Length: 385
Length: 102
Image (cartoon, rainbow over all chains, first blue to last red; front, side, top):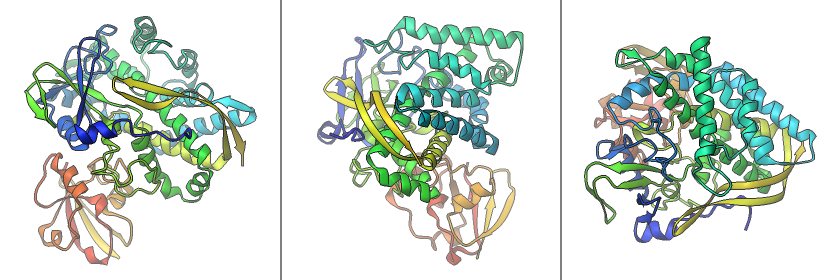
């Protein structure tokens, strides 16, 4: 099996049943696998809440390792609408030409750096540094701060043998607490300061709320971006013709990034807590139980996508839900898309071919379903143009 | 060359001319408020929702099922709603007016 093949883990169950159970720390989740069910449920914020106990809508649940509510992610409308409006403009900054230029410089420097080396481990030596350095732009803080995040390694929120490790998670939470205190003492023009000066319901945002936005920003955009970049590299290694096609046809990059994110679906699913009992594809979702919106399964639904298991770089109609759907669609998507575009542009300009020397797949365990989401290790050699 | 008028939620009228691309691409290029086109035109984000002037709505090719399904879940949907990434610019739509929906 090739490294860049990511099979459709949910196909049989999606077609036969539409839902499947997953036992998560005695708080079971019913995963919704069909595209239509996923979109309809994501849209119904009244019947399916995000405002449960902090950490509960995440699967695996984080209720035992986190008390801070992630904002606006773990809030329902109408409160969600006001929080989201406070941060929306800031998270559209990636569209500014100046932001795009700085992002391009970061990616160029990183790719040039690894081209000097022989073989590299792509996650730790390329994807993580690019993700971390790009994040400094989103927070509007000095590039050097990325070194701290890079030093945390790829398992900052998870330990090698567990998805949930309170000690690991506290590294991030303690760091954010300390940074907020620093910015309270010496205000600057970072996201921290902007949030500390924002008003919610006529009062200043609290430290806890600011922390909630920042945890979301750090956690939501780390593994997802790293997997996206690494998986894309694996694809380009095994499809050298795509490197030339993308390099020679800049508009193809626009459809290619949407197709990669559909196919790789870096976030497998996200939960909701049922507020109003409802039947979904035969599953009776009872009040106060959990369902999850399985973006990864919906994105391979044959009733919506032609040849769903093929990467079609110029796919014209691609209504994927890789960034979620509805009111809670990914806040960082503008940043992610800009990074995805810049990465493809720079990579295909500087690299002629990629060789995969060694690969260890990262397989998620969702009970009856095992899903490849990326790699634990991908050793590659990049050849310069 | 087709003349296209966008009317934003704030009531601003923006007249543009073009002969290729989509109504979304033209609007994004000229920063028409309320048309974001986040997904670049693959019908995944519904950030290019417009109401087409009734006289022109019938002249357009009917929306695909994918587009209709996207609109089903958007705010401010009317019988003249379209995602303007799915409306190609050509002589056939010369003189069209669209109101930005959100």
